[in-house]
Image (cartoon, helix red, strand yellow):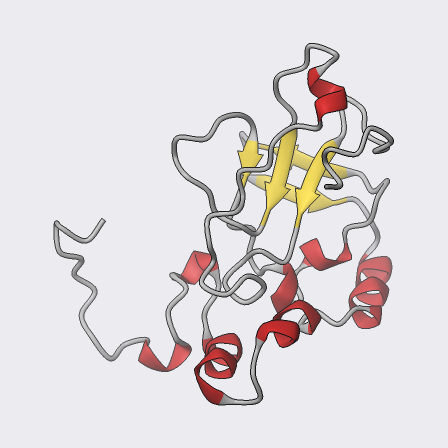
Length: 161
């Protein structure tokens, strides 16, 4: 609904950010990262914008998209601190993604936020969902349970893709 709002404050050179869609924030890290462009931008003839998310999406999607940002917002990563109007540096050649705020401001914003709020809304009091939220690893670590690391082989069968 927000992307489709004709009054959305967005311009062609902006970066779209979607957060709380990683392994903890959107349990199971569902394929929700295929963030379309705002219709008001498409109406200007613009067909691509930088999009950043802790989500995942299909390899058949398109455009300039940074995914699997880790640690994700729901794990207290810097993505949780992003606010409208912030500057973000994306340097693909050097592999750098940086929120252009001071370390003090980052710490302050993260201290004010509750990174687990989105997860807690979905979780039950205990049980598998809570175990998952509490113990799932981040995307860059494979989204496995932390207590299973080192308990089994690392081979991935050919049919497992």
